[in-house]
Image (cartoon, rainbow, N blue to C red; front, top):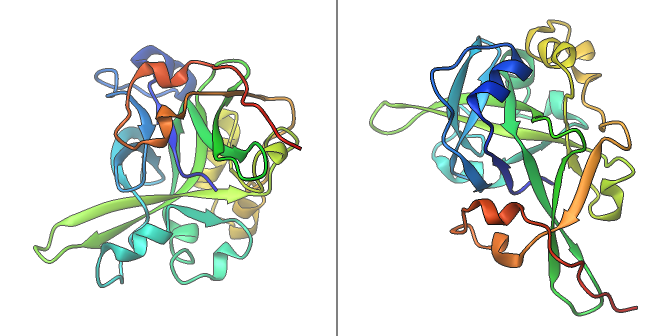
Length: 227
């Protein structure tokens, strides 16, 4: 599951890591939630930073309700699922992040505590994603995306049973966008190697979708646990 993440990368960092040119630093969002606009790079415009709606709306959907359950796409069986079988073949994207959040229960009867997950080396995270285009009643094109998830690596397994597919280098990112062979593309949907992520507790302020400030990145004291 990936239900909340963030992106506050500078223009220079994005250009250096992705090898593209952008006009200005994108608007920062320290607490990206489903239905919000977020930054992606698509297979049909790999040199352009675009903003799509988080939560896939299949082109055949009657309304936007389907997107509530399509913020993530499980890698297992993705090629045969109605909402994803065309996008996995024709509409792949990279979802830009600088970290994501997960929640872990700290003891029986206690509320879940939020943790922030980032790359150890401070680099951006590029999630494997899918996108689609849906027309609303006014005939306007609504572009949306989903984040693909897989089983957890060693670090994440202590917090959650799923993690986003993270493509850590430009070779894998390019392959994800350009690979024509479906099986080869799906072979990229694996957990990130162990020991590449840093995980630390953050304030429960992140629980609110209205919270959006750089202070959400700050580490706090680990929560108490009960056994």
